[in-house]
Length: 181
Image (cartoon, rainbow, N blue to C red):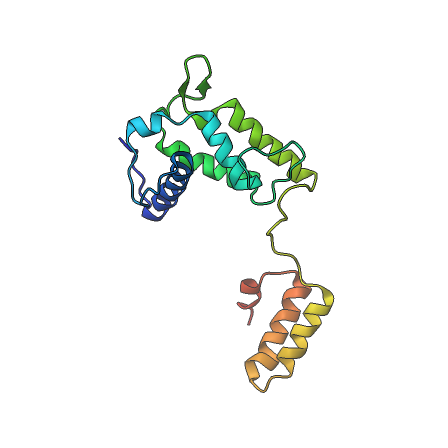
């Protein structure tokens, strides 16, 4: 029934997303190791996936047109879509067929349009704030150097401050600078 997945940790991640989705959809507290039957999975339709993804990124399953996706990103939506799609029995069908109501509901136009809408909002700065690292400001860098150079420990006072200065001078990564003799 299920395709083979070699990585146990990855499978648990997929299973977790599916269980959370089905808990939300059916309003039943399934255990985390629950295996859904083909009948359970065949009842999943694009509207269910759409509403759950809205809930995950907007905080509500029926967001207004002006609402901002502040709880998730388009990348997280694509990840959820992939995790749910893994368990859908019609995985070889490339899309959802609206006429026959068959296929993979995660590949429906409704779900894809939602992800595209969230992408557009992110590009316009109306999405969730980026969690990406930012660079050190000049003041922060000076503060780190002052703290390290005030230490009595030889490594902190001389070695690490020298590595930091060298790293910034070369615009290098910390692991690159630490290998220089």
